[in-house]
Length: 521
Image (cartoon, rainbow, N blue to C red; front, side):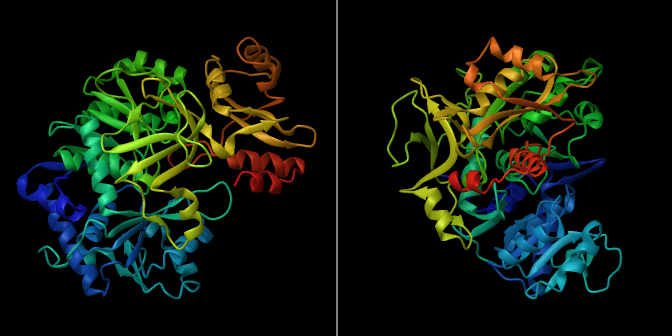
């Protein structure tokens, strides 16, 4: 069914068929498929010489730089399991992932060397710390020493159902869970995305999301690799550098989250740059407000391919078609090779237009959460992955997302969906970011609160926002209170962290959140 069975086969197979094809662009450097294949072989053999074996977990605390790609591909060559770590994590969070994944090896950079050395004493199983550009060599292995291994492909048999990665997802409360994704999960999704995006060898994807995130790994690296295309590695998203980079590298696509598109909509002087290379752009990780969607397409003349997915299903599962009918405001239809249904709490399919939980089935569904059978059993039932997102399917099979199941606000018995209110707020000319949340209330159970970030140079008042909403939504949905903020806490990919907004407000006002989170688990 798939051209390749494993990521190892994908890398070596493409290197054999197109050895001189430039696959990676980084600053003023380029790397061909042959060079990447050779480098990953060397590192793979170097890791084997250290005693790292197939199935071993290897944590990677590396920002966006070529060494992440080299190390990742090397792990796939020897059948080891990549465990990427969010580079924004604090020492306790880093320690938890290394410990929970039972990793014996960590690959990082000099930037994090001091932090890692400090927590090493609390991680008795951690045998090797490999450092890129080390500050000093005390107690560590320089990455350059590992790269000096043999260039021949490691003689390790890797199967399609062998583990490829543990992706740790951030939860509403508590520590993150380790999603077990296999080679089959990755290959299936890379194939599906390449097909849906109509990738060809001429395409060039620009990577601005962090490589520890599945979106960057699957959408912007593996899918182009599967199609024989190439990618541009950026260190991250910078509004100042973004448009000049499009002009310089001439990518045909990039993948970003709604927050990035909102920022791009407010950038001045876009007409000064040659952006004509863009064939389409991809939006995922969070629902795209319709107003942001329309403004971007009008300003940049670029087709938005909006998708939906999660780490528990490799990356992408539902997408608005690149060709054919597209419904703005919808997340589209399931990718070819996947199924999606709206199910109730008893795992029964709901009628069209009735709100329930979005559930996914197919080769992309994870094996489970590492060392967490209870969470696995709750997430996967009869082969269906329960996403925790609420939505409905219309009569043509297009799916509309309403919001997170845990984010749904129940006010006096009424179900209120934050996304509906946020969509309206984004239409206000002064709103840059909006987050609607439920705050515990002794009378109503939960009360609706609105948090907004104004656009630069704009001022927002509660009276103005309430008046704006009164003309467009029912009174019971209008937030009881609005809080204007300078910024919101966000993940490294740019998603608004509503749980932190709630926690910060509750802490400032002495509100007990234990019952709220317990009720929505």
